Image (tube, rainbow over all chains, first blue to last red):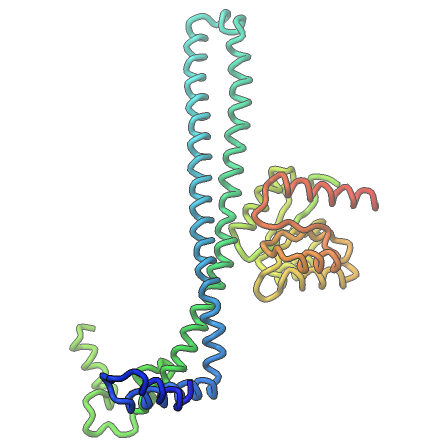
Length: 211
Length: 130
C-alpha cells in the first residue's frame, strides 16, 4: 500500500479518532521493516519456515497416530498372548489331575494327545503375537525420522526470528536478544557491578551461592 | 542357498535393525550382523564375507543409495544382493534403486510376509543365475 493510498484511506475515515500522521508513521515503519527484511534475506527464509508449519502439524499428527496405533497393537497382542498362555496353564493342570487320577485312562481317552496338539497350536499363536509385538516397534524408526524433520523446521524458524529480532531492536538492546553474542573479556570493569574482575571474585560469588 | 547365509542389516535405527534381524531369524536365517550406516557397512563388507545386504536408505554419513552404488562399483562386492528396506516411498527413489542395481525394495512399515517373500524371491533368482 502506497503512502498516497494510506493518505486517502485516512481521509475517508472521517471523523478520525487518530490523526492521519499516525497512519503515515505506521506505513513508514512497515515499509522500512519490509525493506530491511528483504535486504537481509530474512523474509524468504522466514517464508520457507512458516510455509513448513502446516507440514509440521501434519507430521506431528502422523507421530501421534503411529505411536497410538503401535501401543494399541502391542496391548491387543499381549492380551491375546496372555489368553493363550492362561489356556495352556489351565489345560496343563487338568491333564496333570487326569494323569494322577487314572494314567491309563488319560492316555487311552486321548486327553494326552489332545493336550499336545492344543499346546502346539497355542504356542504357535503366541509366537505370532510376539512377532506382531516386535514389528509394532517400527514406529520408533518411522516417527524418529519425522521428529528429526520437525526439529529442523523449528530450528530454521527460530533462527530466522532471532535474526529478525536482532535487526529490529535498538542497538543498545541487541545483546539481550542475540544468543550468539558472548560477552568475552571485560575491557573496562571499573564502575560495573555486573561483571567480575578476577578469579577471586568468581570463587567468592560461587561460595556465596553455596558452591 | 542355505540357512548359513550371512546377512548384513544396515539401518541407523537400532530398533529397526533388531526387527529385521528378528524377522530374518524367524524366516530361518540366523547368521546376521548389523551396521548403523553406509560407512560402517562398507567397511564390514570389505573386511569379511557376506552373502546378502538389507539396507535402509535415509542414513547419516553414507546413505543407502551411496552404499548401493559403492557395492555395485566394487568388483569384489558387486555380486552381493542388496535389498532396500526404507520409508522413502517416492517412485523416483524406487526407480533409482532399481537402476542402481538393488535386488529388491521394501517400503516401511512392512510385514514379516513381505520380507520373507522378497528374500525368497532374491534367493531364487540367485539360485537360477548360479
